[in-house]
Length: 116
Image (cartoon, rainbow, N blue to C red):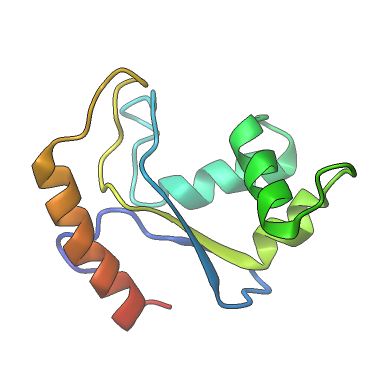
């Protein structure tokens, strides 16, 4: 793994070539803040261990299915997901630093060229 790439992307089993890029994770405990954080969160969403409006809203927007229930498992298994910022924010009030975005730019290029 590249030194700057501290978050591996989620890549669904039926990955179709669509990469969804979010900004960062928020309010993650230090013990859960690992290289596999994006994948671990999506696995928990798909298993029903956690519920988030973010994951269902993204699925609805991308599929255009606003009035019906989206098959979250099918959707998330067809995409890749990654956070541009390579560290978690403590909460929604914390603002990323310029260096976070600069690091994200390099890691995004690494991800596109060598991982997907």
